[in-house]
Amino acid sequence: QVRLVESGGGLVQPGGSLRLSCAGPTHIFRSYTMGWYRQTPGKQRDLVASITSGGLANYDDSVKGRFTISRDNAKTTMYLQMNSLKPADTADYYCNARFVYPSDVDEYWGEGTQVTVSS
Image (cartoon, rainbow, N blue to C red; front, top):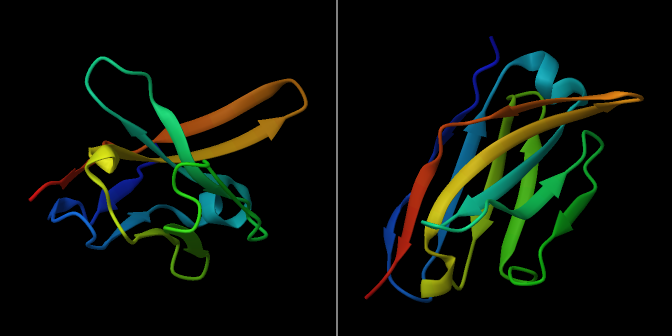
């Protein structure tokens, strides 16, 4: 059973910063693409940022220039540095690991961590 564990969420004022972390097993960090998704009540879960096992990052336009995704494969931990936070960033943030096979996708999710941006 693969377990992804997020941490680092909390309450922050607009303009502030938070760093989320996601820890997981070695074999996941060796070859899976990792990502952060976020979800608000009644809405679908949307991709915030992703990073391949080789370190190529991709961001949603809404967070470009403010968020930075990174991974330390040796520590089997992924990070999301969130700066210049806005109330619109308020959501539950989920860690994701994905490996695409020729005819299948292997995917795992963390349980989520809440981020609230409010004054």
